[in-house]
Image 1 (cartoon, rainbow, N blue to C red):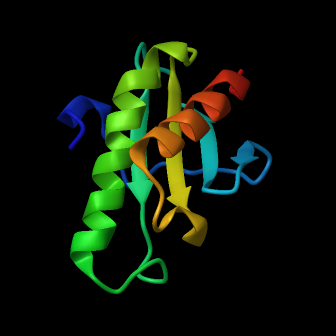
Image 2: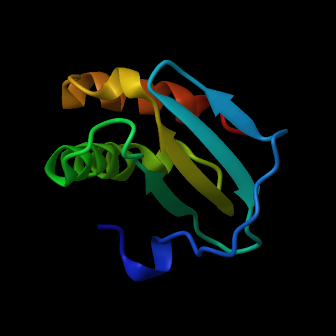
Length: 106
């Protein structure tokens, strides 16, 4: 789990203009006006009905975000929406995809 200050508040609003898409994720980005980035991860029940599978995917994504968060510009809210293609992927593949997306964020 992310530290409390790095978690995305529920009141954050995103627009369709600031989105980056990949085969595993849809990432929404918004300015937050602070000196740090905040993150949120959503894994739908459409991915898998079992909570253990969804929680494993969240842990993999959080691990990858921790490794790659230094590649991001400061002051962003980032929401990661997981797509169905991620279901049986290894952590290395997920981290590689997140690193590529984080390099695209301006």
